[in-house]
Image (cartoon, rainbow, N blue to C red; front, top):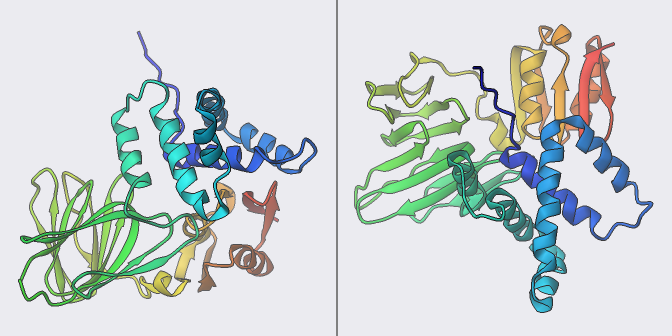
Length: 319
């Protein structure tokens, strides 16, 4: 017998459903948000599944004492992000409070001490004076103790400039795939679902996959991907790989599909590319804080058309 598994809403979809809940609860019956919400529901079956969870959660909130409900539903605008985080966690736990292992990982992302949303970047000065820059959609925890300095990168991308430590504690970045130990260096780590990418701009780092594969030493000007079980061979570092820290995407003869994938990381919603034109190549420097402007410039120089179904749903097709 063949068993099939239906897709389930991921953390980003549940967070978006929670955001729709906040947006719609004070919207009038004729507000344009209702039409945009309906289009969002129709984009993917998991969107409707996520919204059904919202409806079940709404009943739970109706049972709250009046004071709790008022504090929750009428929080000030400055508390919206924390409120959104709380709602998303509740969507994940559901009525039973039982978490699947993937949902537990998502909870780590949502409750991380340092986090950027889609399209956001931030910078942190660490306790030892080191600098940590967070790219879009990044979540991490900083853990310093007497024996080591540790960054737990749950998701996203960071650029680290380490500082000398009088206690000579090791500086380690951990992802779900393993650990990266800094050897007096400036380097970047990107944690995706399937693997992690390490890029070294100064000095060296040592990569150790979680399941005990042979460690890999990366030197200045090198990069490598690794999973929990293996490391790929070291490769030359791509030019301007850290341009994102200045709000830029620098590409040299990249296929359009890859460019759109990178821009999509900074776009709040869906940004996709028709496979028929994904092979087109281009070079240039683009501003990550102006995705619509970048797409407009691309459409002026390439045989493509940018289709907006809503401001959140965008697709690049052949002209």
